[in-house]
Length: 357
Image (tube, rainbow, N blue to C red; front, top):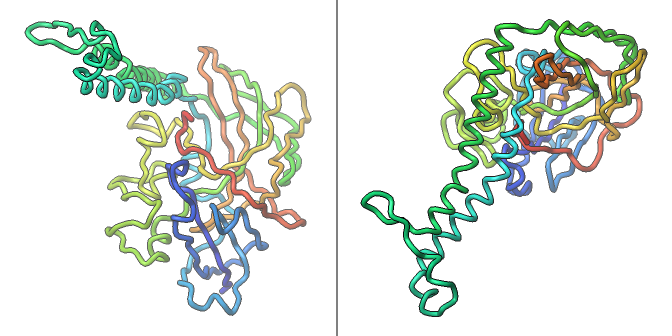
């Protein structure tokens, strides 16, 4: 058996409002039948961090876990990050950006309504602004009648976007696309050389890129290494587990598809691509001639490696447009060997867990 040490502080779903120093650093001794990869550290101990290194004498008190180490893409990643995906409607992004103005407008209107007598006596604001509007047997403050529609605009936009997304998902299920044929000549962490891409009928490819990220650690291992019970209170940064089957990577932390993805249909595979919270990528490149070489991320990432705590996942992404105007993405996992040079860098690249962001 091979032993190594893994140290992880993975960003929670709402990491923008979280202080990394308030999230516990999980440290374990990993025991596996397969040898560990070359040592690497991404991030730093004062922020989000992923570290895999050799065991030393100071690690004797760390909890021990026995889990598989493999270079083969994990089954849940093959289910959720492989194949064609529909781009969420742009109204989702507009709706999210309009939440803050709507809430601010409503709060200001309520404050002015509460302070109405004082504002009128001080002649700070003209009295006609507070003139009520009669609707049926009741009177409603004018300012609230103005603010409330602004407040509910994001809700209507979100409902409309979900209706459009569900319609496009049902259309795709009724007439799915076959996978493109792609021939890869050379793969490394720096770049990937592609000799040819043959797309199915009904879609036109526009651009391609390489991206890499770290999947969410297994919930069971995080709980065990943190000394928490399965159905007890989870550690900081982890929400309650959902009582449902795993259909997305976020289910490991219990954050749920409803938060990370717009509304999905209840049959078939997931057709909306969930973003990895830890993700880096190379530049987009237009698909025009072959052979073509697409550059990887500038940061020195390690190669492909999968374990319960740290799973470094590489993939190719092709963007295209269907004949009906729908934007699509095709995702294919790729196995990238570890480079001969040292890997690791200071700042872990994190992003929102919401696909529309």
